[in-house]
Length: 177
Image (tube, rainbow, N blue to C red; front, side, top):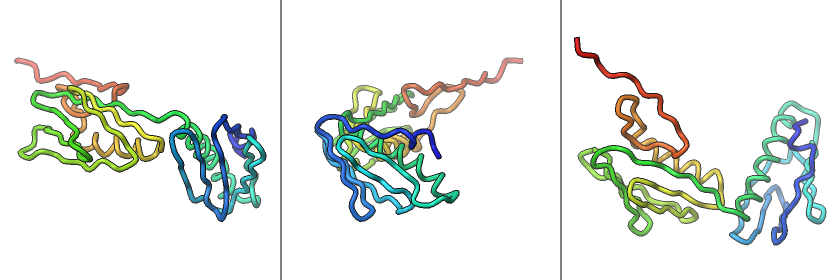
């Protein structure tokens, strides 16, 4: 069994958890998150602690119990403090702006790139920095990855969209003979 799942998960103040009919729900000061979980793992909520136990001894259950513990911890953290991803846009003429629920970017293509922003995610654009925040870790990470995929950083000049903590290994260009 996973080390994460062996310890009980403690709920912070102002946070409530329910598990009914395979749907796990967390309510906190910033909002509500729900996730459908398979019945391979028993989830017991007692007061301010959550314990996970395997429903049966199988390989699939061993794999899922640690995953479910990590998902539950991420949900608890998200409803108490929002997750944040920062992207840096580098390149001459590359820019971004948020207009309503659409992220408009100029990335050196012949056309502007317009990306609809999901309703539960907040995006701010300042100069060449994008900040993506939200309570659902998976959605924030997925949206950041979608935006980055439009123009991945290239190794010669470093142009493109990269995460703020990402290091781009630069290559040496052609040498004069």
